[in-house]
Image (tube, helix red, strand yellow):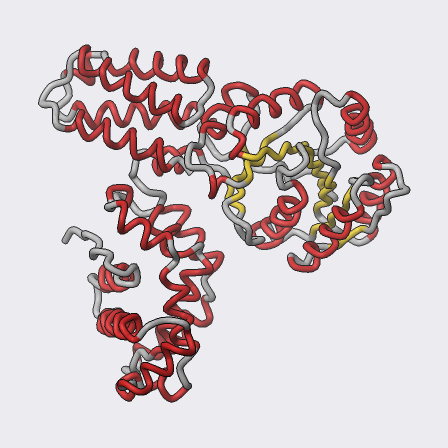
Length: 458
């Protein structure tokens, strides 16, 4: 998300950094570039006008023009205004209410409501240690009820059954009663997709809302629809007292205009971002972190949180113990590290959160986004246990067999073994003090075929 906007803004600010002194003229020129970048990102025109006016007012002040690093001062102003535009801080769900906390989920058909309900259940289970019940009040699509039942098993949520001959109000009320009896902390109610112009359907969800008085009423919007997502969010907010918005499919949205517009237009906070198809691909929305990503400054905090939540700490501890005892780092260990990277969304997702990675050449970005670790895992999976434990025995005939089994070429096998050797050397440094992390990250960098080593300062 924000790939195009980030590239445009970073290019504009690179020119500003080269200015020894800023004047009103070159600030206005930069603001024209920023304005075009925001419009191309499908940010609502009134939002763009307000944003540019705020930035320009602060940027032409004496504190910037007289600054020793005027370019950086302007970037800070833009960063602060982006954060302000998106809502200042992370707006968390209200889970302090008397249990079960009731969450009503609304949205258009096809926005990803049912999948989002399952993702939210998993998020609350893993991050907040809550017991969650889910139910579907979509009485118009039997497939929606079955889908939620299947997904609830995947995320280990309690499923309250419903049928198409029941009334949505009855389903919601009965689910809450069942949640109380089963000691659930949260109950999430999925609803049918509806258009805000469909009066009958809007009256139905209003009745459900009135009957259960939810603590949270969340609107699920497809970020790829851009300003349509903003407009429908506004329309639903006028009909229902929304408490927040979840933007889905942000991994496929290179523009990001909805995320930058919704808060300003609706006055309601974005609470979560759907970042992929997997059940754990749901991120809490942090305006400051997202602004930092847009401006190419990374998002280390989210990376650390991802690592804490998704990395298998028992396996990591075993590997650390193995290295400490002086035992070698073999291909089975390498495979495990690749799978851990995959759990965190792949190399592209990880590097996107590191400062300065936005400046990588486009060809390198394409290689990384192609998830090279998947190909490496396929190669290692085609090896025997003995080959994984003793990579030195892998000669020409073995390479041909491995290439055939993994659908790759001998050249790719050679490249993978070279990358493994680099990683093996770096792992030997893991217990040797202050440069250990540098060694690890450079070793990871080698996994992106042709990717340059990442710069680290001493």
